[in-house]
Image (cartoon, rainbow, N blue to C red):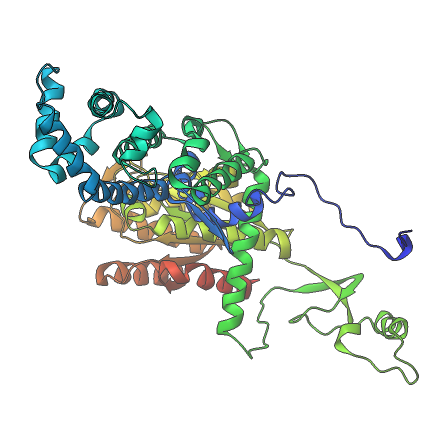
Length: 514
């Protein structure tokens, strides 16, 4: 009889997401694996890229269409070589010659057999280039000719006569036809929705169990991911759900904080300019917290642990009072959407920064506000939901830094009493500006009108008490010189960094300001 210790058993429940049967890569893992592609702007294209390139998570490999194509090419090369070097091919040539060549046959088939008779290796390559319909008459003619000379054998014996192991010429030609069929099916797949066009059993027959199982894993994993709730909408209209955006942001923030911690190992300072007040609530101590111990709760924790008398405290017993920012902050992150940001790959880094900062505000500073904006020839506000699909502005001409600062100044005007900051993220100079009537003018290279209007807007930011942080993703002398002058006129801060270090630099700067 089974001894059940139900009183000591522990169970953990989670929502069924299709991954529990072990036959797929879990959707949560795919969300992490594909996050960069999903944030590149086109979710359907990201799924299609995964379908073609394949997936690899830990020790699990899901084969993509490119893998199948490579296998098919290799199989074709090996099969053509085997046909060209098969002694049975020469034997067949000799039989055809003895039986009178190609008299009485269809003209096209006659030419094929003549080529086969003249040059076996070339004929093998030619035969491999034919599709199944073109090759069928040749197969039939070969069988007929062989049947005439081997009437005493049945069809199975004829096949075996072309190779003692049953892998004779006719079988090789049949295998070429199967390779052709599978290759045509693979070519017809353009999007994830087309995978039903590929016959799993044909993959297994032609390429083996490993290929079939690997491709089935791919298709099943992508199907489970699209059904998981991380995506909204159907093909051509897919968007990341709010839950997926939050998860990606949390993971980006965790990675950024981990890198910051690694770079600042041993630095236990926790610089902050904001003021904090005790809320009366307490919680377990976390590394880096101000050590304002809730002494009663700390001692009780040690007693519950069985520390004995006198009570011996450890860091695990520490309980600290919760602190709440007495000052709130409103920050606008304005992202350059000009052509260069997209072509240089900077926009992805900017979106990752925005998602990470949104998670930082939600987790650490829930009373703060993070506003998003994008600008090219004009500036506009953005929502977090728009961020994953955000792309560089193909229809806007110029980089209107003046308009980005104007939008921040007017928007943050409604947040008086809060610590207000504009983080301006760009890789260029002002090549557009608005005149007093609101008309946009383009300048390349930047003209004095654009520079004057931009510097004037920087003065207005400073006058209204909005702190400007200029973050430049460029090392060009003209761009850096402009950014330095803009920062000086606004009495702000300048950060010059690279896309790889953008999130670390801005997250650290944001945390220090709070």
